[in-house]
Image (cartoon, rainbow, N blue to C red; front, side, top):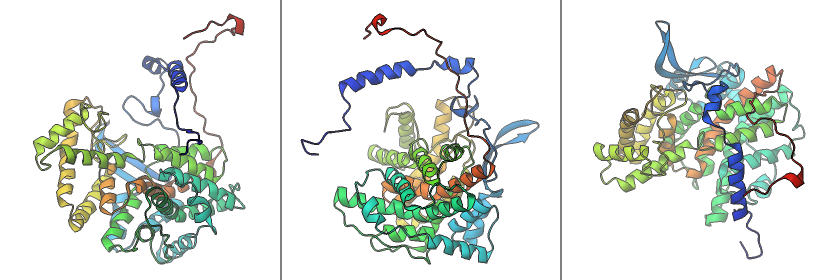
Amino acid sequence: MTKKEKDYSKVTPVIRTLAEKARKSTIIESELYTKYDVKRGLRDLNGKGVLAGLTHISDVEASEIIDGKRVPAEGKLYYRGYDVRDLVRGFTEDGRFGFEEITYLLLFGELPDQKQLKDFSELLASYRTLPTSFVRDVIMKAPSRDMMNTLARSVLTLYSYDNAADDISLPNVLRQSLQLIALFPLLSVYGYHAYSHYHYGKSLYIHHPVKELSAAENLLHILRPGSKFTPLEAKILDVALVLHMDHGGGNNSTFTTHVVSSTGTDTYSAVAASLGALKGPRHGGANIKVVHMIDDLMKNVTDISDEEAVADYLEKLLHKEAFDRQGLIYGMGHAVYSISDPREQIFRAYVERLADAKGYSKEFKLYAMIEKLGPKIIASERKMYKGVCCNVDFYSGFVYKMLGLPIELFTPIFAAARISGWSAHRIEELSNNGKIIRPAYNPVTPPRAYTPMEEREMKA
């Protein structure tokens, strides 16, 4: 930045003073939520989400009824009624990639036969082409340090290239959705290449996708300088994409899709809003926190095979004495699951295979140790309304690290998977749309009489 350029990111003392004034004016006492029976965060006292809608797309289960009482159970995830464990087992044992097949399931409600899958995969491949000069004119201009912002900007800019951008008829929305599903890996990876080139002076290369390759294979192909990857690498990335495609209608970004779509807005605006939700570290960015936490542990624990030393570090995390001092063991716990996260359990076997192949066995043993110790230490330190378990974010960042994926792309890859679920939910919302989603908020400021300017007192 030159001396003449204005620093728009500077927070002045005046802004700090005004920010504190704004903060004080918006503080709501915790007891008011109980007084007015408000489900804060749309959750009840047990942490269960408030029922806000109906969906065919997917379902999450973490409890079962025994003797008339609801008790915690092994977690389950269903796509269109199919247990995700059965889906992953099905396409992996048959030697197929699953992303295209499960995207078809989410969008159309049924598993495709061979011809339907072939035709659908070819349709997606035909959409893996960006508008002429889009990379040069959009992605290469003012590259952002955050790939989620780059992705959102690219999505919003695609609106300008679409002659039917505001048409929300279902055939047109499906066409737009398929294009975005096909293009998300390109937009993400090309954005990263532009950023690393202009900010870090790395070589710039743009590989075109290959129509015969799957989504997972193409992502590795366009990301790596030599476009080389092993079958195991492509397979585990494909499984990761499938496991992240959807997670019930109530997760924050998918709920955002429903809320924004209910207004009748265009597809690009709805998807950009969902990207903004996913970007948050409490949602899509959690796996990055896990990787940084493990890096910090390895710097501060001399022997990472020593359970006692690792446990001591984990206790320091909870006591806000280590890492970011937020009192959290990242990758542990989930808003819904209590005994197990089915995505993590499916993923774990593949993670171990990749760790063996990549020479990360020692680090994998550390992850496995924390998976065992974490829930016990949390339960001993804190009163829990439900059990705590390892979630999918705990291992996904480790997998991406072993695949050599830059950390800047961790959340965009999540988005490249979740766009399939968002698209299905957007179509569902538009198909059943009768009312705009508008929850109620209870005002807690009493009415006040207007005070003329000359009667107002100056207050510090």
